Image (cartoon, rainbow, N blue to C red):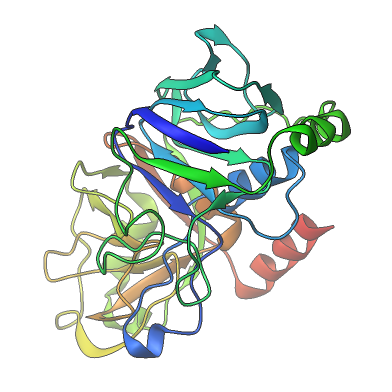
Length: 306
């Protein structure tokens, strides 16, 4: 069974949980931006092994299936339709051979996740199916999907119909993405590079997501953050959600396709539990940061896992 791309989205790539173990060689982790929506999409179609999905940004396009399968769409509301009939978000849908699944412009949020029963079956490269566009590796030929592309899924036909009977009643609450986006952060490893005035600016100002933002990082426009004596440092490792401040004084939140090391001071790190809301922000949305202690972040993270 295959899925054929009829209309490509604005930026649709194959992603999974990420490619780990190779940052020492300069290879980014890549992977999905919104891990919460990714995990929910896989759960809705009965996938349990971290299978690959499609990540669609702003506009999802249209695809056609050649055999029965089960699909689900989570994350940004792109008003999915089967054969031009609304099918709903956050629930499994049985697609029959010849059906089309289409996603419009994002009504709320920025990124949708499309899971298929058995996962998107593309080659595993260095332990992951994620697309790394910088290195042109993984995913579908290391690039976003284009018209005419076709890929296989892991479960289809009668087995997919049986899977649908198992999962048909599953659902998750609809996500509501609003602006401004408040994200909780812990103090960064180079916080001492910034003056008290600079820190006050960072924690009190509202920043706007720039149209130059991408999967590598969100560039934020707004009041400059004052440093003690510049923000250049000896390059060190960068975590998902690290907030670095270049010479301009305007922060950049580094995300899934971030570089493995960086030479600018990091004033804060976005807590993992708030990254899903942050990465659903679109250019023009505003962001504000709230500092919490490491201990509080650990408590929140532990409670979220229960």
